[in-house]
Image (cartoon, rainbow, N blue to C red):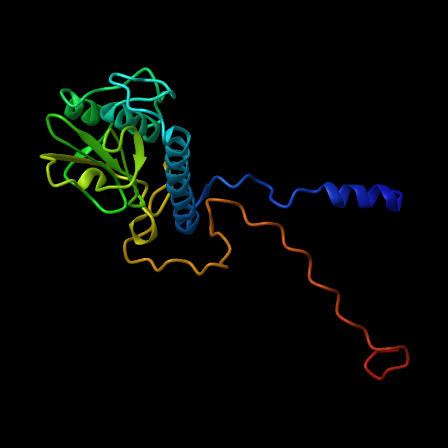
Amino acid sequence: MHPRDLFAVVRCRPLFNRHVTRTTNFGLLTTLLLVSLRMIVLASLVSLINQVSGTPYIVGGDSPAGTDCSGLVSWVVNAATDRPVYGNRFNTGNEEAALLARGFQYGTAPNALVVGWNGGHTAVTLPDGTPVSSGERGGVHVGGAGAYQPGFTHHMFLPMPADGDGAPMGLPGLPPPPPDAPPPPPDAPPVLVGSIAPDMPPPPAPELPPPGDPGIPS
């Protein structure tokens, strides 16, 4: 065989003689993904607010031209739950049912999307604490008390993807690590489970003593 052909065979030889079928220790990666997801959700909400901030108060409005208090809350909630922003609004009369249908829970929580309302007004506070409303100063406005206004009698919140210690360890379809398992160091390689170990290179040949050395039998 020509040396060039031998090099081609060696270069194309797979590192593993079977595909890796299962991996674990993805806790750190999952945490990073969840933190990134939370940042993406918040960024999308802030972008929406920036687009409509300063638009006039329009009763029943449901377009970028302007809206009322419940219309703005509808837009924010729809964006946070991956629904079309416009064309699916609610009002203070059916707000509770609409929020339940979108995954909201009763009460308030830090680092969550919180909605507050009563029979005549509603407002929202973003996960980063930014208060937003429409109608308090003539139109869509950033500021005020948001969902935490003293006159609100109802509150519901949408949990955001957990970060830090609250992030689940593991990925769908994979068993989670034991509860007492220590987290892997940041630079630790992934642990491969259920795979065939790669072929190890043959050990080097022992070095022979130079010719004439007494160790070589004549």
